[in-house]
Image: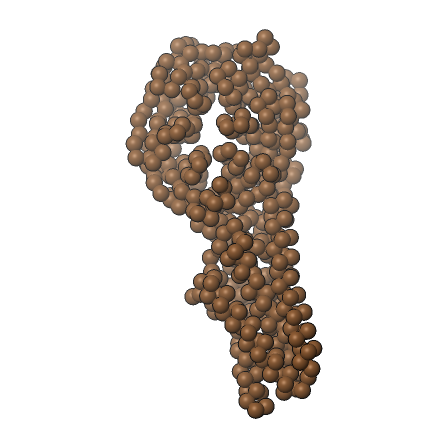
Length: 494
């Protein structure tokens, strides 16, 4: 009987040697991909670097322990504990993860996650059998064997649970620039070819999306949200005597607005009526404008006192129409390039967001911009990495290539979609070069939600974004594309 037990133990030992050695070698041969997979794990993202090396090292140590007869029993304890850790990891993936990632490669690449779970549980069971039989062969205390089994396996399980809880906190609250991608989070549904690449999103209503055109500012394009139908809308201004440089269209129901802050002028018209009237002229110079309501606006300008970017409120019904708030945008160097950013508004709760272009900050403001809160994006660029030169006439110019952090943003209710320009830890450089990265933030509880890729089209990247309840629309080159949210992402957003 002892001989039979010995054969069984050897077979199980050789099985674990083969399993862990093959697994370790497979990871080494495709280490970059393995590290990326760990980085996109919905449980261990924050520790991808350490875990990617640690797992390989542990697997080699276990192989060595199993190979040496003197340490074979310890190797069996370690094998069982490691498989228990893998088992609880898969259990958490299937039951507590925000999404289920793609199956891993290597020896188990043909298995789905449920089959992985069954395989791992089987490995734990045969490991326990081998330990039991080895103790009989060596005439060791079975009680001690049970204690060691319980302690080692619970330790492996506890370690994974602790890493999971800690990783979730780090990723969502104290992110060290590690992204978590929703696998295939966006599903391309419809696309429509545009006649040029000068279009931009001007707004939306319940059934339509409105596009403005940089080169034809008095023409708007109205698209149904399924992109199946399109119509053009021409705008007639009641006064056209100004030398317009940058007329831009915005939609905020029931009105549309045309504005050019270099003149400065604001026109307003009712959607469906081509006639737009001048409602503001020379009240405030600006280069960005966000509409609050039919007579109130938030704008960005250059302060005559500080010579730096400043936010202000324009209220056409107030005796003092313009109120500047120089305390909001924080100067780091020159007050222009280092404070550059994009101002957008969210209609439902009258919130405004200013996202800095060259640093990892965004400012959440109320409609009067007298109450604001600074939040951070997940990258680590807290100080703008720019170099400027002051010309003899006092103008400032960028004197070195810029280190752009955030490119463009869109908001829907409490979620900010931010097109980041930087590659995070443990990401595929090939993927990063061929797609635009969209990071999603919950601005109400100040957390990072996750990221998605939008693939380039004809070597063009995303130039415009707009979000609806269950779709993301992107302008890429001369195309507008609608993407549905995959169930894992949609469930998170709702």
